[in-house]
Image (cartoon, rainbow, N blue to C red; front, side):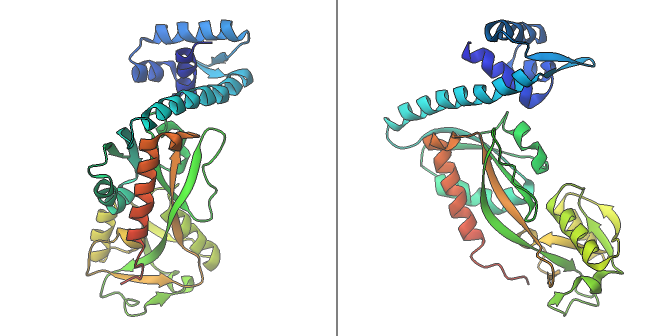
Amino acid sequence: MAVERLRVLRELADRGTVAAVAAALSMTPSAVSQQLKVLAREAGVVLLEPDGRRVRLTDAGRALVVRADEVLAAMDRAVAEMESYRGSPRGQVRVALFPSGAALLLPRVLRELAGSGVDVVAADEDLPPSEVLRLLADYDVVLTHRDEHAPSVAGPRVDSRVLMREPIDVLVAPEHRLARSGAVVPAELADEEWLSVRGGFPVDDVLRSIATVTGVQPRITQRLNDFSVIEAMVAADCGIALMPRFAVRDPNLVMLRLAGVRAARLYDLATRPHADRRPAVAAVLAAFRTAAQQATATDRPR
C-alpha cells in the first residue's frame, strides 16, 4: 500500500468529506476517490460505504486509519532522525491555540525559541476539545483547554499532555455588592445574572457545576466567546461572569475566588502520536512548558 494513499485515507478520517480532502491536498475530488478505490484494492477489503450523499469508513477502514497513523508517524520519525544529524532542531512547526491561551503563552514561546532555528506558525482556533483530531489534520501541535473534571482527548490517534492548571474566578464590577468579599460560595450567586461562553467550553462547564451545587439554574443573559467583550459587559454592570484567572486584562474589575467548588481549566498540548520525536516539535513543546511555568509563577486573584 502506497504511503500517499494512506495519507489520503487519514485525511478523509480527519476531515469527513472527499471535497474537504481534495481541498486540503490540492487534488480534485475525483482524484481523491480514485486513490481511495486503489487503496481498497490493495487492502483487499471494503474501506468505505455510502452515508447519504457522502461516504464513511467501514470498520476495516477505521482499523486501517490507525495503521496509517503508525506508518506516517514512522515516516516523520525517519525525517526527524535525519534532522538530528544536522545538530540543533530546526524547521517549521504549525501550532493552533485557543485565543486566551495564545495571549498568555504565545509571546513567551516565541521568545524562548528566538534564534533556535525553529519557526512557529501560529493560528488562533476557538474550538472545543472535541475538535482536536480535526485540527491535527492541519497543525503539528494543538493547545486546547477543558474543565478539569472533563476527560482528556488522548486516544489511539492523539497524544495529549497536561500543560498547566488555571483557576476560574468570579468577575464582578467594583460597585458590585460582593466586590469586597475576596471569596464567594455558590449560594451567594444564585440570584445573579450571568455572562457566559458557548456550551462545550470550560467556563460553561464550571457554571453548570455551580448550578448543581446550588440547585438553581443560572440566568445567562448573553453568551459571548470573546473574553474582552465579557469584561466590557461586566464593567458596564450587565452581569457577572466566570473568567479564567490569567485571561482578565481590566485592572479595575474584581476577581473573587470561588469557595466550595473546584473551578479551573486545564491546558492540554495535543499532537499526533510520537510527533515529539521530531526535534522541532519537541523544542516547541519544551518552550510551552517553560512559558506555562512563567505564567503560573503567581496565580492570586486581584
